[in-house]
Image: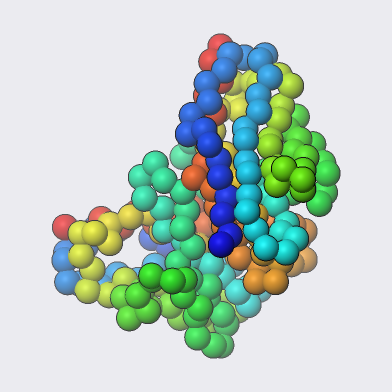
Length: 109
Length: 116
């Protein structure tokens, strides 16, 4: 069965501290993996995609097929990073996203 | 960039009535749209995939007759919650993909449904 796990409901850090939001997946085939972010009172929006291997707002995520992980990292957290983060694999055959339960990141001053 | 407009943002209805939620893709055509449901402090659960000009594909456990989906044009999908009950109260979100705008899906702002 397709499954995505975000083990932390809440991650609280101080400004300037490194951040790692964990995501593990169990998926058949070769899924595409995304991270979506939802800031307070805003709609869900794409943060980054594993195929692009890009850095958005200082965040990066590396796909580790051996560990079936796609952890989201940022070396120095900022207060404006406080939001809900969702890991979402997509089965390319069906083009549907499956969302993890999400991790709330709180960055304190 | 691609924008998905969802309406209404909030609706309160009485038990037993039906409520229609609209999802429009602005400036792009969407042959496929997706409907999600989100309970408080929980993740988005895919309810169904809306296909323009054909029947929607429902996820396991989602009642087709309860949640009617119509995708009559390339820019509009509607979700109708029929004979609503208090347990249908939730946050409903639609999304679509603009294939010409790059990766990822664009999400609507969601509809908060409260059934009293």
